[in-house]
Image 1 (cartoon, rainbow, N blue to C red):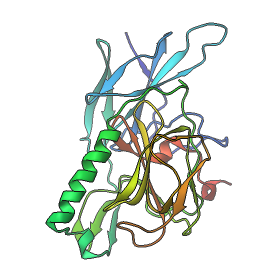
Image 2: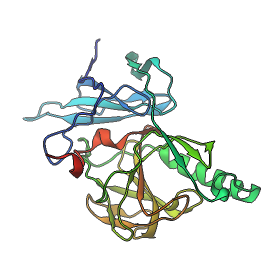
Image 3: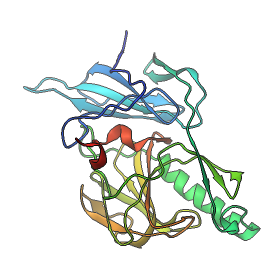
Image 4: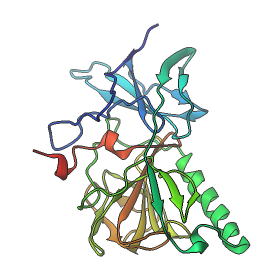
Length: 280
């Protein structure tokens, strides 16, 4: 059986013309998305990639007919270029990951945020395991359609996704999120319906909120001045979750937000409508 990929995106990101991104945008590079049309089924298909179940969403299915399904596969930022595949039953969903060179970013921060002492490293490792457990989780949402997203804060875009980052001249992990240079104290809202899975003060991330949107889609918001939600709380799109700050490893007030799908950090702009600065 052959499975058809949705339209391939190469070069500049394509944007929807409506207020929301009508569908996620395919971009076959590290930190991108692979999309596969799976055909009709009354039950949600089960697709796996890198030992993780991936998000599938329904469309159509009017008049009692079974809906069509699409798989949205997150490609890890550290993925190697070349052929890759997911599994759907005994079938392979094969795609080719293209090479991509992300830009560099050089920042000056306190030395403790570049070369932590042993006590701080113990805390960092504990927090990494705590976040990793949530990123690897897979919970079924009430809705089976694609979770249309809105921008979580107002402000110009500052640091894009995927940057190779150098702190005080030393290379560290790449930028696994997107930064919005929002003003200190400005509102941060849930980009889509979900459940608050964790909140807390993290060493690098500062005050942090993690939202589970279902099927392994997790958003994380960092450096907040204040957190306004609690773990287990149900939030709806547009609900306030906190305010912008500069806690943790931050050079100034901004919102860093991460999108994770099937435990792969992907570019949030692939699931968003155009940023207000891009609208004509």
